[in-house]
Length: 201
Image (cartoon, rainbow, N blue to C red; front, side):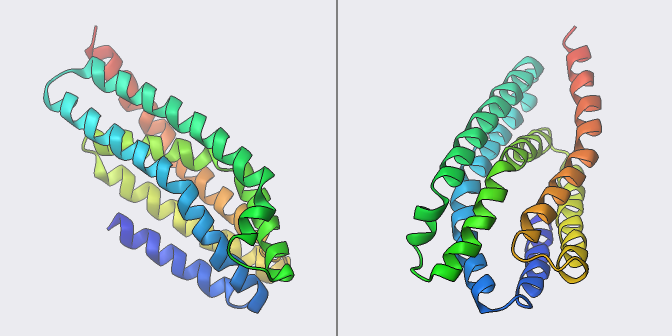
């Protein structure tokens, strides 16, 4: 269900992109590949958190659940900062790996420089998702993913069609989605985290 929600959101974004012309569509296809490479380690850190936390929750080791979450979030943040640096500084060379079209490269560099600044947010949201999957609360991960993708699409529509923004509209719509996701998740995370802390004393 969660993956279906993500894919439906991507279809909505792609439909909006298709109205922007050939160069923007081509640039988006390229930056999607770069995004996939950027996000995969964040997702894998979260998967590692899920496995480690689930095992320790099952063993009744709440202290290790907390330690696993802290270590995972620190790793996510470190990686988020690293991938921001790589994609921001090397946006041009990264685009040139996939295309030689100067117009496509120009659109792609705009996108990458904006989205790279925000990579810390999916790092944190992936870590929080790993936490909730690890403790077995999948309703929260489904809800937050639905909010993320829904807000992305809803934010992109006025940015593109009302304000006339180009490919730079997408990073801002993604930012809105991640903020919406955090607004949904963080209060639940704090409540659950504090309950774990109390159970340890």
